[in-house]
Length: 112
Image 1: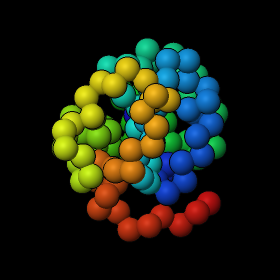
Image 2: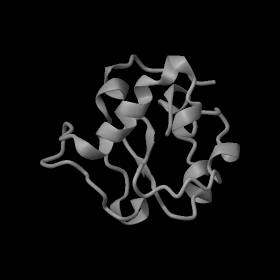
Image 3: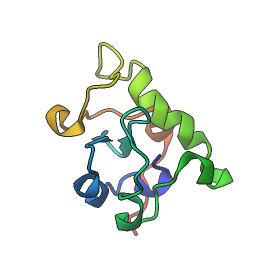
């Protein structure tokens, strides 16, 4: 899953590295589809802001991002008429322009 350091950065190196195309683009953050990800870990070392974690390794302060990441796919978000579900690949979907509730509620993040 992807946590706070990605918000307003969205470097996309992880997207290019992902062999299964499971990293989706919101308006302010990227999101890993939990059912499409194969847990290969290829995305983690290329993230320049160290925002990607296996669910069991998420630092305590970023645990709410586990739920937020899942809600990106399961909830009806602003600008959508239905949940995103499992589209089967981020490339064919393209940027969604919407974010999960926690990311939406954040003030703009300062750039590193």
